[in-house]
Length: 63
Image (cartoon, rainbow, N blue to C red; front, side, top):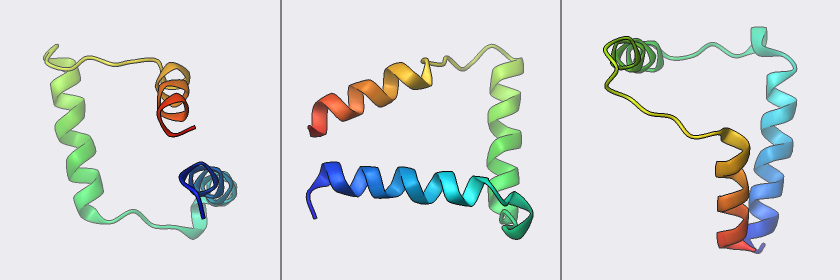
């Protein structure tokens, strides 16, 4: 499977998983990481990029 197909497959799987979030429990380490990142945001120590722009950039690199 080429990388473009792999990314397409991952997108399909993720979309499906997101439709039923109650069926998937996040591990504790995930909550801890999110809490850490939230503190970084509150303290102004983090920057973000637009997700659609990032996805386009990734697709351009692998296409």
